[in-house]
Image (cartoon, rainbow, N blue to C red):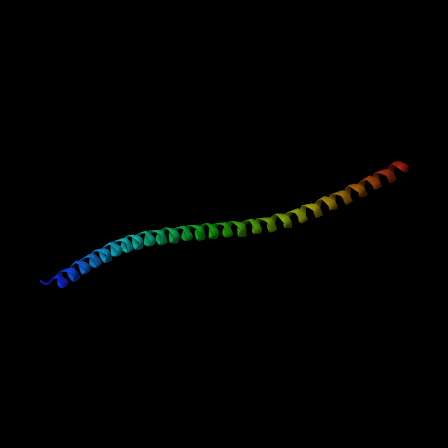
Length: 99
């Protein structure tokens, strides 16, 4: 081999070695990114599941609040009716006592 061919072979070998090292680094980086992407995907899935659960709980709470509001209105009406009846009885009792 001539000196020039040996130099070219040495340069090409060095370049190939550098390329292989860079390829190995890029493969490692790719693996890390893939793991990170999977972890992020899992995290997003968990967050979405929590959000759905919380939305369902909120819907149930709103429904319960509505039921309680209606029950409160009914009880207030009954209390007002009882107050009215008590006032009538008191008035009748006063009128009878005044006689």
